[in-house]
Amino acid sequence: MTAEIKLAAPQGYQALNVDTVTTYLAGLKTITARLGGDESGWKAREVGDGNLNLVFIVEGPAGAVVVKQALPYVRLVGESWPLPLSRAHYEYLALVEQGMWAAEYVPALYHHDKAMALTVMEYLTPHIILRKGLVQGERTRKWRTHIGTFLARTLFHTSDFHLSPEEKREKIGAYLTNTAMCKISEDLIFDEPYFDAPMNRHTTPQLDDIALAFRQDTDLKMAVQELKYRFMNAPEALLHGDLHTGSVMVTEADTRVIDPEFAFFGPMGFDIGAILANLFMAVFAQPGLSGGDSEHALWAGAQSEILWDHFVSEFSALWQGRSSGESYNTRLYDDAPELAEQALATRLEAIWNDALGFAGCKMIRRILGLAHVEDFEAIENQDIRGACEIRALEFARRLILERGEFKGMADILRALA
Ligand code: SR1
Ligand code: MG
Image (cartoon, rainbow, N blue to C red):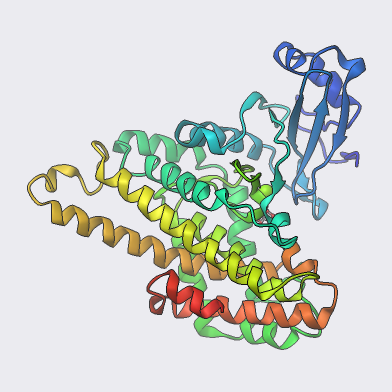
């Protein structure tokens, strides 16, 4: 699809299409060398199916690249919802930072153009989007530990457990003005599902009653607002900011986390909660999907346990080996190792608690808010989809309001069963 820009385009910006993207790349020596030959032998296709951006795959005789370009509006909605192009730069900054700590789990970067709001990066093949694999009942396995490692390394190394206060504040500052993207999350995750927002949608009439009940549920709304307050006021670490299963590309052996355009400094549990929420939704959707079965649902749930356990062990190893960082400064524990253990346990418990709360919010917004997920959307029969969604909503509400009762993943898996 070619984007037609009617908005006043910022200086130096032009939305590309399948014809102009090759001409753009032909002006870049390193990319020309990577693709091989010249522009006349390159093929471009637009493959973006996300909510926000253009994504091109450009193939030449020697290789291929991906070109991701931000549009000055929300693609899902159209030009009536303008969105700053600056998100492409924050995404680039985040990919560079994540690449410092978890290079094997992010795409390689070849070129970034701030004015054009685009990044040229590695074409990942034969990778598939994790969400699609889960919907189709595929069982790739490595991603669960890879994502656990990605989270532990990126969150730990951008936090006060590793950085000096100067470094940390400078990094917070670099993402401070990714305001429009944070505002999307603040509105779409924490507010809109709880009032009759114009862009909300849900499976109707099957979910009419529960949608109304959630909008009138004072306890739920209060707890969600507390979580929103944490989202806005806890710059613990650099977050991916939108770590759902559509932001992960996998093969059997390889895992790459893509699309961190919502990056900002926030509570660690937000990223963890995002991926857990999407695994939980995969579980609840299974019985409704054609070819779906209870065994696959159980399998999908078990992946969340492996992911969390791996995060804990990687994060703990980083904590135990640390020699820098201002928070829980090691000088306090030199002669009291049991205190270091206690401090780590306290932090992990707080991250767990946040993660469950945010996971609940993320599930609710995908069922009652604007942006939905393929897991449920792929269920054609409305009654069956509605039944799956209601179970997911009830579970999500428990995650938010009763999260203190889930002491570990074993409790979660029992509730999912
Ligand atoms: C208006 S953008 C809707 C959603 O798409 C992205 O993936 C984010 O999750 C955002 O909230
Ligand atoms: Mg995205």
